Length: 283
Image 1 (tube, one colour):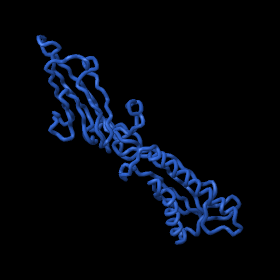
Image 2: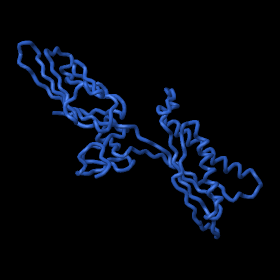
Image 3: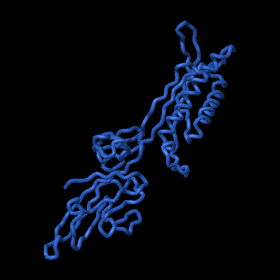
Image 4: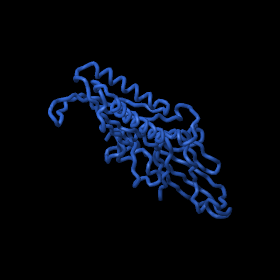
């Protein structure tokens, strides 16, 4: 019995799942009887999250992770009134999926005041505020992941203090903001790239402004050329990407199948013989 893979976006309705083969779709079926079973047993339309049409078509509403698994539909029918009943069993494996969460990791270095100075702390707060103001209109935010102050020995002798900053830049889903968003400019990845451009421009201007003034260097300033922005994909724990296993949804974060798990928000389901459920987060 071949199983067909079906992918349903988390919290969305499934596509229509048919209880007939393509071959029988256009045939007349006499006295058809449909019966659906899911991971939790017999399915009926009395359950608000299940919709079964008179012709046996199944729609799963507001799909959740725990509904992932094997679904069977058995069909009994006659092709002519005088023939005995025929039986058919169809098998579907239905997977929850979500779009990947992506963000930019931003690293940057600043020449700093002595490492235990409160000047560094107030500067850090001001810098986060400035970066957040830059991207606020895009519904994006900049979060400080870590900042470390180090003594760095320079090539031509002498020690200087430097702060190594790591930020993450993420964009919120605008659907959740209840804003009407149809065009591609609302797409989170489009806004994230716009945020990247604004941040890069900000640091470029920092250098240009400093080169134009004759004043001595301030105590804390951006070190030219240290800005790096790296695009990072991640899936929720219990989900992963695998184009070989899921060619029908290659760029989706698909729920981990039994025999695999994902403990963190990396992008792969890892092998584990002990995990017996869909969406395992530990082995």
